[in-house]
Image (tube, rainbow, N blue to C red; front, side):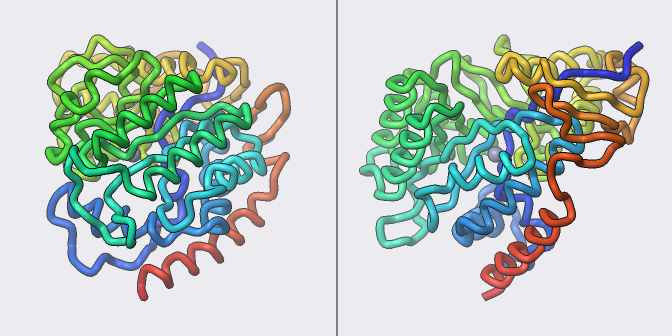
Length: 355
Ligand SMILES: [Zn+2]
């Protein structure tokens, strides 16, 4: 019995989506996975600028730490504002005091004249992908923890995928990539197979049938929300971790969702399996294990208790020994200011999307 844990890890986030809540309805209602991307996320990421990215990251980081999450592994795309975007995310997280491991997710789905296009493996690398790789390289060379991002193989040429893998190899970091989230990306194993390494983060893997080296990131809430099916992560020999795919960073909640999603597929699924996925986050971010979270619940170390206990909240959070939350309130940042500034930026973002 215990009411303390280390800091939790969100192994796949999109901090830029924090301001998506309340966005105008898309012109056409999405009818499948690809149209969700086209109608919602690819319109949203094209409308981002540095102010929106910064305050979105600050709000997402504040929500994370108030849920006991002290490291965020972020995957970012902002095709109209690439240079400096990873610094804006890092600065937003630093305002709160949360660790972030960012990546810029490269893609060739934007033509050099700014149109959304279908991509063939044989196409040449686009200017946007080159700039995205440069942004990753510049940030990695600053010495801060980071990864090289790829959106997904189905929106990238072979040239871009190979260049991203090469950059990761040269700089000694892993690649953070969506894999077989929906049926449009079921060719991913063939496209990535020769290049993937054990330090890659393979996100979703719902339709993955082959073995790829890397850590698999399971995002149960997002998978349900996008109606892509259950990934059945327990079938893989790989290490599995949990992410939110941009829907907050409440990892105790994501653990409960991972448990109940597993249980809906298999009556024998144990919360201990979902707990192992949650705590595997410390393999990716070992410093988080040494952070301290004191919870309002006495059985935080019991998967069988926690799976059925909703509403657990942190009372205290310390990161690197520095108090960030006390008595369930932030003490190292101004939550009201962040909410206020984020709301202003959300209004700007939503106006752009309504135009
Ligand atoms: Zn994602």
